[in-house]
Length: 102
Image 1 (cartoon, rainbow, N blue to C red):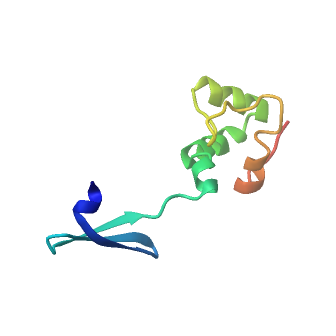
Image 2: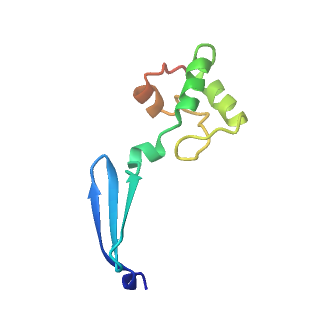
Image 3: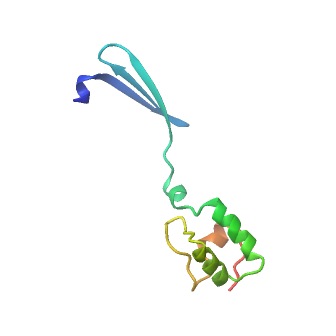
């Protein structure tokens, strides 16, 4: 059905996705969309939570931090509860340069 309205379209990907539609009547429409996030960015724990971890890390162990974050209803970037039985989500200390306290 859409084929009856659209003559052709062009997609250009650089810092954003540029879409140009040419309609059967001759008019054109240009649309710009941001690039989709990569897999790592989609699964990254939000910066606001990382900042809370930094603040809590000065006086709590990893298990205490996990309990605190879970009690606040916060979740990891993958939507999981924070783990109580390991070094506060092992990837966070390496990726965010956080101290690991057991």
